[in-house]
Each structure stands twice: as structure tokens, then as C-alpha cells.
Length: 640
Image (cartoon, rainbow, N blue to C red; front, side):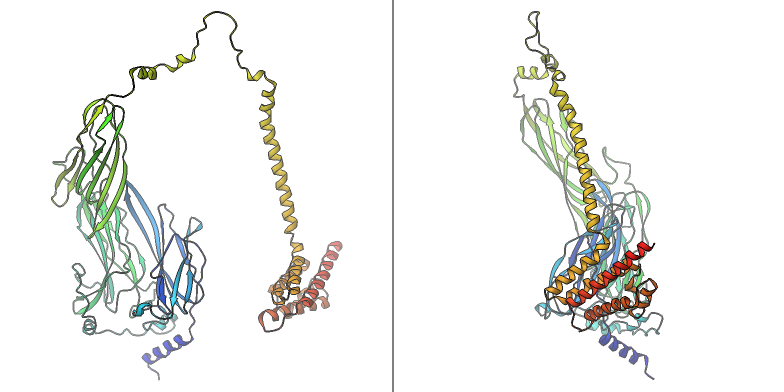
């Protein structure tokens, strides 16, 4: 009797030789598509990622990718995410998905991949297609990347997962941790933070951590999720994001592609470790705020599961963050809840000399780490007006900390002459490192405001009551110098007044008649009764120009339409051996039925075998048969 290991090897070899993977070439549109490499080798897997984001409550669904022939496609692996973003002082929710396909080319050449698409709001949203070059060898002599684990030609592919529930599952083979450690002893040591407190599962697990777990409203807390695998490198397919509705979210790391994997020792075993997510979160309210679990599917040798194609699904912990307000004691005037971080403020004023009534430009730059506030406290001065600023952001994350700069461009109007002190811009904030309130300041200095350059007479004239200029004093009594204009007394006034509605009515009538004429012409042109004759004319022209093989399709379609119009029988769904009998029940003579069946058989033979098309003779026979069928239909109508 053949043992299980030998049976597995034989079955894997049979699948390797005889299996033909399905090629999916779905057509559609999407929002954004990226490819891992524009130049790959034959047999080298590469990834295509489709990203779709929405700021509304509608979630993009059904990702698709159009792929040319000659490619093996795996996927998509889809993950959805919901987040809250903060930009320009505004809070917005985002809904989106990411879909990943893994493609393998079978022959060299230059191909067009895409477009990819998602279903969004009842329609497909289109992105661009892109070109990729496939070469005969591995580019640059680099080692060929390993195919995804559930690709049929992967050495670690579990053949029995194709017959879920039909064949017994193969026993897992435990790997020797010491041998794995020796094999990869040249790898760099894992950075701080990769070492978990312990293994949460025997084969693979996710470990989520949040730091700090006690914060104030607006203070950054960092969420990091690590993936650990004991039976080979971490390879994640399906993912489901952690919920974090009570936090503003800034993404530091949203996908693990390109991240270094490390080896860590957990107990007596050596594990692979990979950072898969990192977010900068800012709590929006006080209380015990919850961060939901993240789920991911581990793929590869040793991780087969009944939940394929999701892989071996594991879930991280649910985390809680205790959030409070900064202390009320010592809170400076103007402090807004949520202004937390470490900031500096500087500003420039131009020009320094202006006339009264003019304006100066104040450019303030707020720098630091944290969720940079979107407004500053401006000084209150008599005869000085601060307009709403234009705000631009230059935010970034460094070492997991959000920061950068936010610039405010103010227009300040100065109404009174003299030496005007603009005061200072301020931002009170809570420093979570020093645990005290601080104030960022920028002193603006003075502006010399000269008197207005307009003469006094011009100013008085500008303030004069304009209505008085409309009154003209007559020096003496008598007839007015000019006869008042009375348009209604002119006969052309009424002609022009009536021309508008009359012209509208004539235009509407003309357009309506034109639409009726166009519709009648379209109905006559698209008359189904004329379609068989039109198809036969097309077939005749093709046969006359020596393209008899192309004429077979129009002839066959014309016969099917003619039979359906004359008898109501859809002959395409009737076996050829039963067609004569079916036509006989609908009043068609046996001779005509046999003629129609024979013509259809000749068409089918010409299309699917090496038989030589008959060309014009077949078209003539079909035309004669359809003419006899039309006579049968007219006879039936007259009898009824």
C-alpha cells in the first residue's frame, strides 16, 4: 500500500503536469493601480495592487483586473479599511479597500496590464492601464522571487486543499528551529520592539501594541501590529483592519511590502517577525477608548487551512486606551482641548510701510511634533482687521511621530495712520513630555501707516449721497428740452415683445417633429423582420470577396432569426436531430425542415471542423429557404 507521503508526492506531480490554471481577464475600471516592477522575467511572480478610497459612506467593492493571455493570476487578496483623517482643521471619514493580485508570465514580450476596477455607487470607476516588459531570464541575474503559497506550482502547495473534505489532510512537518536559525544566522538582529512577551499560538499569531495606554485628548498614541510565523517567512494575504472610530488616524505603515523580516526567539523556538501596521492615533474624547482587533490570513507551506483562500486566519488583541483631559489648573487663556504636542512659532510681516486703508501680509509657520493645530490666536487691536488665513500643510512622520509644519498666510488691514504695533501670535498647548502647559509665540513688531493718499475733496465726494446726482433743477417753467423716452408707444416694441414666445413655440415644435421623424426612421431601420435579409446581404458580400469562412456566421444567425420570426421556435436550443420534427409541429413542411437543418449543419461543420466553406452556394440556399419561410408566415397570418 502506498503511504501518505508518497501519495502526496504523486498527487503533486500529477497536478504539476496536468493542471491548467484558470486565467481571469475581467474587464472594468478602478481608482489607482500600481505594479511592483515594470520589468520581470518569465516565471517570476509580480504583484499588482488596486487601491480605492472614498470619503463618503459608500464602500468600494468587487475589485477586478484585466490581464492578457499568457499570464497566471492569483487573487485578488482584498482588505478593507475605515479611518478618520484630520486635515486643515476638518475631520473626515474614509472608506476604502486594497486588492492584490499575483501574476506570472509564461512567455517574453511587452504586455498591457489593466485596467483594474471597483464597483462604486452602482458604477465602475476607471484607472489607467500600464505596460510591463517580460524578459526571457531573471533581470540582472537576481534570484527569482518565490511564488505565492497557494499557486499550484509552489513546492509548498498543499494539493489536498483542492479537495476540501474529500481527502484526509496531510500531517504537518515540524521544522527544526536550530536548523532554521543556522540557515539564517547572517540576518541582522531584530530591532527593539519586535520581541513579544510570548507566543499566542502554536503556528502563527498577530500581536498588537499601543503606546502609551494612558493619554490626554489630542496626544499621539502609536498602534503597531506585528505578525509572527513559526513555519517560514510571514506571507499575509487576506487582511481586515482594526476599528478605531474614537481616534483621528494618520498612517505610518499601511502595508508590509518591502519591510525587513527578522528572526526572534520565543521560548525554545525561532520565529519570523514582521511589522505589518503602524498608525499615529489621536484620541477625540475622554474615557476608555477601544481599538478593535485586526485579522490576517497567513499563507505558505505549513499554513494551509479550511478557510482558504483566506489562509490560516489569526486575530490580534482588542486594546484599550485610558484618555483624560489635561489639568484645568494652570490652563492658559485661549487653550483649545486637543492642542497637544511640542511646537515653535515664527512669523514675517511685509511690507512694513503702507498707507492707511491698505493691508500687509503676515506669514506664520507653526512647527513641531503632534497633531499640529489648525488655528492660532491673533492679537486684538483697534483699527486692525485680521482676515481668515490661507492654510497649507507639510505634515510627515519621523520615527513613528507625526509632525512637520503648518503655514498660515493672513491679510491684515490697517485703517488708521501712525506707528501700529501688531502684537504677537500665540498658541497655548499641553506638552505631554514635560507634562505642563506651554505657549508658542511670534512677535510681529510695528508697521508704519502713512495717511491716505486720496485728497480730502475726493473723500467728501465719495461719501456724498449718490441719489442727489440724479436730480436736475430746471431754471424756468416750460416744455422739457427732451421728450421722455416711452418705448411702449413705439409699434416695434410690441412686435419684439411677442417675437420671443412665438420663436420659442416654433423652435419647440420643430424639435418635436424632428424627434418623431428620427424615431420613425430608427424603427424602420431596426425592424427585426428585415434583419435576416440584411445578414444574408452581408454574407453574400463576404463570400463574393473570397471570405467564405467569415460568411458562415451571418448565414447561421439569419437562419435562426428567420425560423424564430416565422414559427416562434428558438432553433439554437434544439438538437439538429430534433429540428425537423419541431418545425413540423409548427406547420413547416418536412422538405423545408430538412433543408434548414442541413444548412445549419454545414455552417456548424465549417466553423468547428476543417471543412471547406461553400461560400455563395450556401448563401443562396439560405436565401431560398428563408423566402419560403416568410411565405409560410404570411399564409399563417392570412388564415388567422
